[in-house]
Image (tube, rainbow, N blue to C red; front, side, top):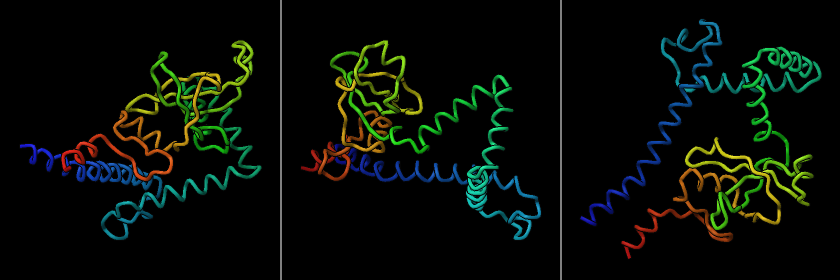
Length: 219
């Protein structure tokens, strides 16, 4: 029975990640293919070939994103974008959603050298318990003066297994520990709930509890 269980777990470790990856790719391809609806009907592949081409929407989406970037990167595009944002700013509900998503996008994908570039270890939610936090900036302003801390770090503490939600914490630099692990490795650890543990500096490959169990049973 133990051997059967070991084989079953080994098979799941192969097929489960592969199945989830394939399902995610299919979802993304179908999502991008919806961008074909922006094209006139006689421009779509199924009009000329008689059948749709899966993934063709990715080309259309990338072309649209690239063209938009080229448009807003110049002076005229900036003026048009500013007018568009002012228009959205006059719509109550849309203004709140748009501004929040825009600020988060700029923090993650923007040119800031501070946002989500460093991973810290901090004691949270109480002393003796540790968790991971991502640096968002080191500029606090009024909050820094009110707390009396010499040097502070703004941290985003994600939740498991959904790292898009979490908590914002202002911490003193002397109370947190900077880690060498990258943001990608830290996100894997958070999403897996600690099952995937990044290797120590100098080692290669991440370990999981399942892999450790299999290694112990094999030996």
